[in-house]
Length: 110
Image (cartoon, rainbow, N blue to C red; front, side, top):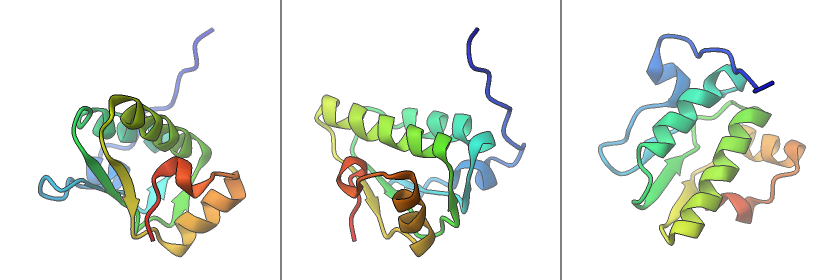
């Protein structure tokens, strides 16, 4: 049976962040399971080009969204395109640690 994720809330800005004028994507404060499908959609819409994600406002990073970020980082590496996470909040770093995510796998910058 395929995994069916719940639909994210209607407000797309709250779900996946806002595009930062072509410079990348500002991640939303709440990156939990209901927001994973929209986050994936936002990221995949930028595939093939350099991508920088601003993680400065993240207050919670859940497992599903972490999986989306890991898969995106891997895909960008395979495509030979730059993928970076910049300005991670303390909460983002904390949750990466709690989830056992290596910063290098996510393209994490200081």
